Length: 425
Image (cartoon, rainbow, N blue to C red; front, side):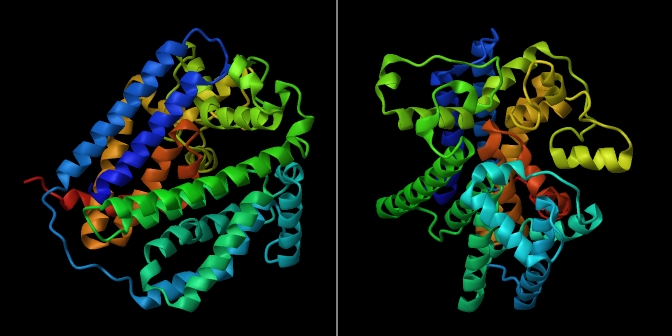
């Protein structure tokens, strides 16, 4: 099996897995559109597969090229910039004074010890101007992606520093009472490792090692997820006796079967949280078929773009978005997920979202092949960002939003300078 095929199959099979979880989920809103929604999600996954194939076909003629090395000065300058500014990003997101490291440590420690408190503290007045956050985020939001891609070039001492920063980033994410940050880091690490495997054809032994590493990473994610959800629900799954803890709204019903009810109580609650995490985006997507379309002007597909439109273009693509319309149905636009498909529909309509998914998958596949043939840094960054976007299709488009201030510069450069120069022979 070729390395590219394995990576793309992981992305595809994970989306199929989330669809299966949605089909068998005990959670439902009884909208009347469940069967149609299953068909629609399956259609998008099919378009994802076709996009992968098209991206590979476009780059099939590329010959292996010498690996491009990032100049050491660039590596060190980016590391120094991150070390000088990473607390600015944390302070902005946590509503803390800038460069107050003691306040930052205390805030994160409180959130790690009590995820419920960590999540409830996510409000207040910003202590840092958005412009400062924007400028620092251009580098800081993709610092770990950059570091993972350049890992083999780094000296041991630099690797140790980055590992410490990675651990701190994990604690920061846990300190906010959310699972997204840790899962995002794990997915970035997994993708960065797989896309740099040097052999095009994988032996069974290599596949086994990759699967073993994947299993360890999955167990780590499950542990963090269980810890956070137990903390956010009052400290113990044993104290939960009804469905209100899922925070999915009154329209959601839970229909468990006899086998499910025979499981230990803690496992039942954990499984309900897993189903909620993986399928609520699809479940609330069912509402889209009875809502009106209001074009977001290509600024409605992720929160970062919506904020840019509100602050600088003086129009609000969020006001009439599908998320805001669902507020009237009892679906919290900030707490509940709606799937990435719904976010894309704000700009592309329900009918054209599968086309958008096709091109996202095509560019993902092409960026992967381009990176593997030349170790081009921009191709590697674009691949990891788009691949993560495809991984989180079941949830929302917040991953793209989290790196968007970098992506808005890197993607056009890559697309016009690298991708457009590929000609299919």
